[in-house]
Image (cartoon, rainbow, N blue to C red; front, side, top):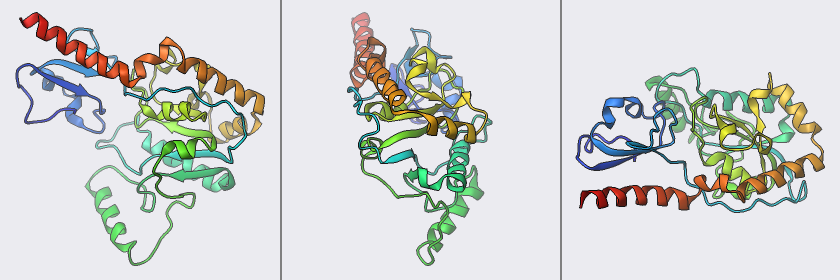
Length: 277
């Protein structure tokens, strides 16, 4: 839902605050929340258990396959849209995605595939100039095809179809170091048995065991990361898969489920209605 100008100040309204302020700047203006009875958000800096209620991005939780390298003919993939933040921010991970893509295209093109929308155009950049540039190239591309990202394999109907064939996935959130900002991206990898290279929430280890994913922050360079991935044995890979399955089967994963998402919203509203009687 996020901030909507026509709903601000409407008494007894509830706000589902899911997008980051770097995408929707209005979501970062505290005074915008004053007109809402309660705000459901992932943002740990806001959560107080009263007005601001903790909620995570919902996921269909199922146990991950643990078949090792079998049937995984893709080494590493990245699935995301070619977009940009609405405002400039030093924590921008759209930029880091492009850096990872370019590194693979230059140094290990045979080990990397790119999927998602918009990679037939130049990399998206912040501001009106960036939008104008993409609009022009979108028109020109219909006349003369230009390859901007050689690793690009096109759009996909299902992330799982690709991730279930990949050993690893570059799994970056849109913005880094936002406490509690854990989207569906890492869970898409988990339920597909793909080991994610994760970069995002500063407190990810408070929610997901550190041995279930590869922390991009632990590597000084893409080259160091690549060497680590290439050196991983099938036994070590299966270990990740088994730990992921254990996590998904545990109570710790439940707050990220669709059921918990619905229960949190419904129970909060019902309690408010009961108190009003």
